[in-house]
Each structure stands twice: as C-alpha cells, then as structure tokens.
Image (cartoon, rainbow, N blue to C red; front, side):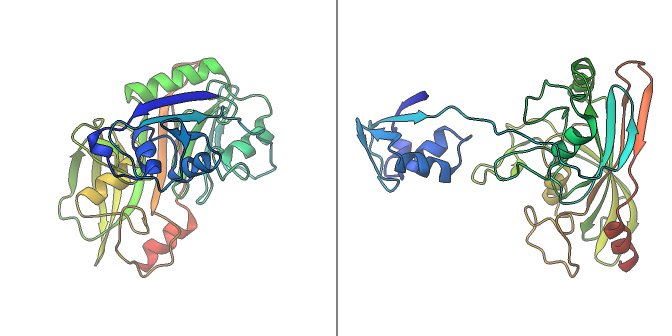
Length: 301
C-alpha cells in the first residue's frame, strides 16, 4: 500500500475532490479514483469523504493506493501474419482492431497473447510480463509492420535505435481535404492533451515531433499520403495531420468530420519498418501490404 499526501491550494478550491486528485496524479483515471473514495481510501483532514466533496484551501488529503497486481497473460492461438522472423526478431503485420499488449479492459486477444503462443518463452523480458517482446507500438486501429524482440540483448539494441530516431518508419494514410503541396514537413511538439487523457495535442512544452509528408494522389475531397516519421511520438501522424486541418479519414478521436464510408478507426497503415539487425548490424527492412479495406477505399475514391 502506497500513501500519497497533499494539501489543497487556491487553484483547486471548490473543485470536486476526485477531480483534485486526478489533476495531481494524472496516471489514475477519474473512475478509479471514485472507486478508491467509495472504499474510504481517501480522507480529507483525517475523515473519509464522498467524491462530490468540494475542496477547501489547506485541506489535507490522504490517498492510500493499493499495489497494482498484474494479471497472468495467457498464450492464445491467434493467427499471425509474419513478415520476417529469426532467432532475434519477429516482424508482424498487425491487423486492424488488434491491441498490441494487454492493459485494463484488454487482457486477451492482443498481439502479445498471439506472440506467447507462437514464440513460447522466446520473447524479451525488458518490457515486463504485460509487454514481453514489445519494443514499440502502433494504435489499435492502425495496421501494418511492427517489430518484436525475442531476447533482451536484441531489445536493448533495437530500443536504442528507436531512441536515436534511426529506424525507418513509413506510413500510408488518407486524410480529409485536398493538400495543395506535394511535400511538407510538420515540425510541432506534442504532449498529453490538457483536459482529455486519451488524447495528445500540439503543446509548446511538449516533445519535438517531426513528420515528413508526401502527397501520392489527390481525390475530390481527400488526399492519399505517405508519412515518414523522423520522431515517433504517440498518435504523432494523427495529431499532426489534424493540426493542419487535414485529419485522417475515420479518426473519431481527432476529427469531428463525418465520412461517407463505414470505417473502423483511422485510415493509417505502417507500410515499412527498417532497422539495423541487432546481431549482424546489416540493414533489415520489412514491408506490410495494404489491407483490403484500404485498397477498397482507394478504389471508391
């Protein structure tokens, strides 16, 4: 059990106590905080309170946070589209709708469950029991190439390449509207959205993020793009494209525009990933073919 203690400041006065705690500990969801309050794990001035309690200046707040227990992650016989595999690496073509690794609400049917069945114990352990082999991620509804490491040495070497931004990561996307320029570079820092924890946003104090965009084809009300990541921030392409007024088709998180097509999430495909092989040092590149839904959409447009 871990105890957190803090004092209410003027900026938080008259805010609900559950909101005050979420502002101070942004890793906890509001619903989880409310659960802790019901269990009387939160006290104000030594007494339990309800979530609706309005904070007062200099209130002393105590929060008892139970230790997180990681559930057992089980192998599942889920087919994998393998683009490359050897004793160090496996590169897969992730389908749309598949979560990369287990998290709250998704402890089965993830890529990790499939990898545990396919690879057995041959996955790096650096990422912990919830993320064996996982050195990077792509979003649930993004398709395409993703590299997984089979041992800790390979994991460290590949992770270093991601930190150095030396890995080739080329995506294909379709965005709303017609982009006039043939080439453009979006260089805008990204950070967590100030009010919505599920989103990221362009933030002055965020981490530098650079996306190089090439127009492949223009349609009446959409543009087919190639996006190359110079950096690899969470939701980078999705946020950058929305920031210039051209959100991706189907992206319900970063666009309120309606699309006439029945899409499941953003039209974004990780076509190419290239890296130095952790054992040989030679450049290795894998290419994931466009998924059927993406090809069909291009034909319609």
